[in-house]
Figure 1: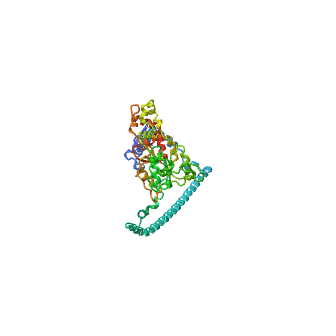
Figure 2: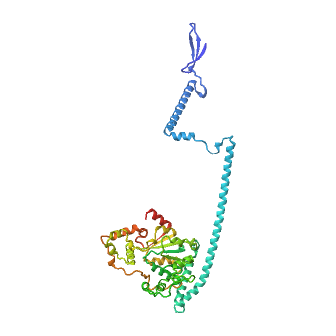
Figure 3: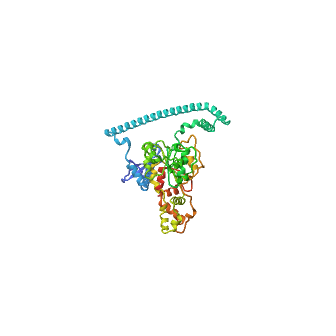
Length: 479
């Protein structure tokens, strides 16, 4: 007799040997099965285990398939991530002492750099504190100055009132009014004076490029009689007559040419008091002095001669602005023909007229060597203005030049002092041999001065430029 287990049911069966040698089951224990752990029979537990194993196997298979799919779709991302080396101090490894020493030195260097920046921040804070103290002190000084002015303004206004009764001359009344206005302006804007110091300063020295036949003589005389420190070869401030009773047109026919020109323009063409040399020109005189006391310099010189003036040590470090008058090319060339006693009509109607037109009338040219783009590099600022816009000139120079305490009278308001004979329309007739627009085109091609004014002044009357910016535009636009 022995016991066995049914493979497929898990039941215990009792066997006994029979006479014929075959086993006979004595009892089927399935009637009263025994429970294993967790209250389950062995058969039930085996079934549960197999289900769990299969579930885990299927899950792992799905995960593997998903990872394989990601690797297939994004191989670069996956393999670059897997192959990326560790960074930072972990690269050193636990036993690489030299590597750890280098890391320590890096950390020390960073600490020193942080300390340096902290010191710089502290220094900047101290600088700001000192600057604030300086500004506060300046404001206190201005406030004290305004207080002193306020104490005097009442007396000044009283003096101004007395002048209405003729007790004070008119000139003093005007001076008093100017002071009162200045005091009122300072009181009203005193709080903003410090932040605005140094802003919008006018040029230190103004230059006038006297282009021939652009009212340069008129410009010189107007400036010399309105402002101090005007040094022009056609007018200087300290050599002006008190009364403006001279006529420039008389100069051409005067017997005493030098005396008449002195009366009209304030010239100093006279023997030198030092050397005795005759006909010392204004340019020679001011050049020997170094132009050191000039607020405006007007010259009839070539483009290459400006360096001899602007590079003088007495003008070093000062802002230099050049004023360039512009005139319509056609009107300008006809004026030049008139000055040279040339009839434009005869030139273009005669033999070689078409060639003369193509060459922009070379027989009429006056002073074309006085301008070329290269001369602009000698100046910091450039002003282009319509040659007869003297109101614009006055507005600009009032902020740039010292005015005379007593302005000299003008015979005519912005009057022109002609150096040409009267122009005749008979001498200025266009023909098919030289139409006006053809001549204009030729003039623009022949002289950079005409291109400068055409491109950057155009139909306006006043334009101001930084010299560097203007030169860049000239180069970029192939003017």
